[in-house]
Length: 207
Image 1 (cartoon, helix red, strand yellow):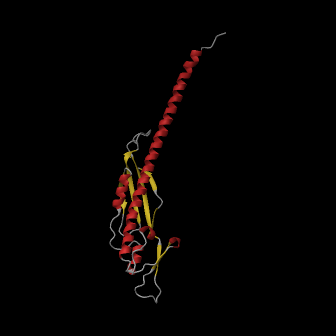
Image 2 (cartoon, helix red, strand yellow):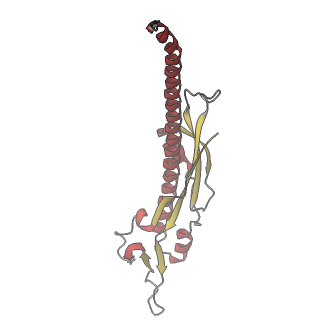
Image 3 (cartoon, rainbow, N blue to C red):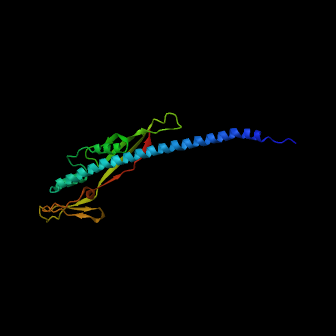
């Protein structure tokens, strides 16, 4: 009877071993590349969200400042709460600041005068990195975000028999109520009391 050669079996198994190890290494590299790309995309979305919120908060602060300035002129209040008051300045500079702090660059910032929505698109400064797909390594992640400013308060005009110096009340969310006193304007609502700032549905994409 012929004894089987254990060396022959080992020789036959070696190519299989090489194939399996090679496949595992390929999968590990693929998972690493996918994870790196996902992290880059998440970073882009974080930068876009922060940039849009920062720009919207600047716009909110401007509107609140306009209300304080014209608190004794109730005829201007409605335009302020609708975001259409005069004198607003661009807020995209804050988007550029926040994008830079998150290692990204603003590629587009829509800041039309008198809007309560500000949209920002950013691109990461760093490329995607190693990839199993040819030509992908140098691509950069893109993301967009829109921030919305909403008035928290409704204007409650004084009763018809009220004196000319009586200011309207502000009836706000969560039951808050402000009654500005023209003779004591030291205590007035803060910007966050007058306006909410939040993100609309953000959409990220890679190009």
